[in-house]
Length: 326
Image (cartoon, rainbow, N blue to C red; front, side, top):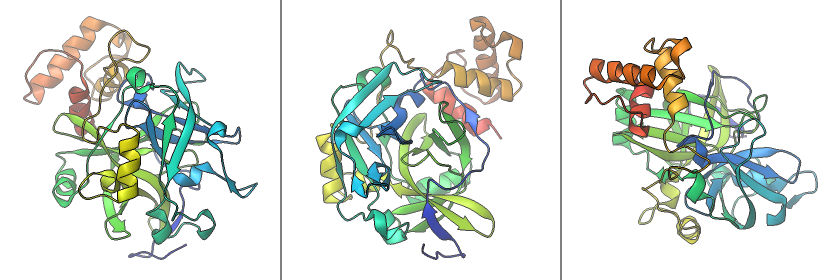
């Protein structure tokens, strides 16, 4: 462990077990681009697609602590949009790359955590069916916008106790940094299974990943989370090996892509939008599956918030609803 400013200590992100979560339909984008990294039949972590065949996750998920070795690619399987034992979009892992400087036995130190990443290369281009997520650096300007309520940080993963359901934290606040600005401490809680999950930013009508979860930090106020900034993977400012690993996987960096219409995953998060409209009191629960009621509720929300009124569900609308949700 390592002591941080404010009396925080870092521990492996598999450890914590608290925090309010919101269930989502994992077969709707952007959630469909997130999935379970199943490892050797002994557990799972979370990972997310950054290209057709590339998944970003935490390196420590790939280490077999019982046998004291790194798992082979044949022991790892990625399931996108996993929902209650349903796995329509999945692929074996053909190979993976990790930062060789990460030392599992060194434990959860700030120095070690900044190397805690791995890119999985899939045998199948399942990003075409599930979609993938773009990356965005959490710079000071964006952090200030989050504090002002102009953007929102969200964490999504498969936590212990709800490991067959994707659940999200809808409002994470940036608290501090570690490893310079390589690591981000924030207020949303993690549990076993959340390692490798994305810290997502909704801003400007777009959804992108800003960090990769690797740690928990215990403070006097309770549990907080530590995530590795995706700036590590961005050309021009990232680490050479990390940028090359993302490029090898076909990452598009800033540009994510929703799945096409007609596939197993929906390109629009209709169910999540319905739930948020209900939370805001705009959609009566009994009419949640009624397209006309949804359209009316969306139109009402758009009118109240000064948006163009078209009654259409979209990822951009999801972001505005999340911003409006307490």
